[in-house]
Image (cartoon, rainbow, N blue to C red; front, side):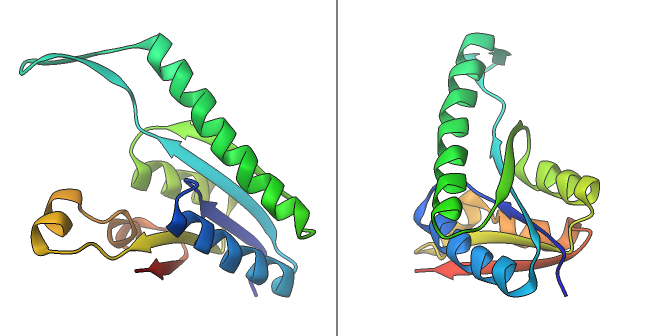
Length: 145
């Protein structure tokens, strides 16, 4: 039985689908539900040499991700599920795995959208695939097309 569920939430169509599946599992198993929104570190590009951390841009992005997270929490509250959440910055796989360990999650839920063409799949990579390799617990991947 799942007692602690972590949902990696980004507000996308795949995130919405994962949110629906996640809240059903949480209600069924009487689990505690945590949403996490992982924002990438924002760098201002200086050219081919690299970039520099932009604190103003980072704060703006954090507010945007907080809005997305609050929307997910509101949707859960509307169907009677109490959850809490947090916005973190960094690599998605690293941050999701770290949070799952910290809260002692039994299940991580992520959304995944199939990409058309091998080039798109190669270029983007797959957070869900990498997460399965690094997660400290079971991972449910909710697939949308």
